[in-house]
Image: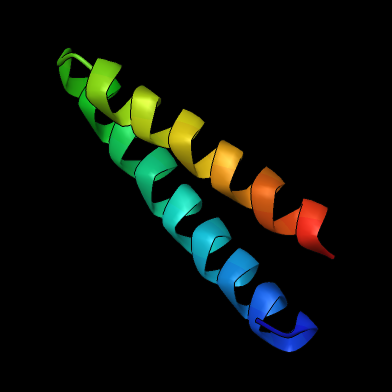
Length: 55
């Protein structure tokens, strides 16, 4: 995987992160549990960190 592909993957993960954050906000507003999505955010953070370490 070259540098450009790594940056592209990081950008994709960031977009997914923002989407999940929005979903969490919607669930919080309606009083639903956000534990699963919070775990997804943590997973995305770890993946982003992993890709950044490859740069």
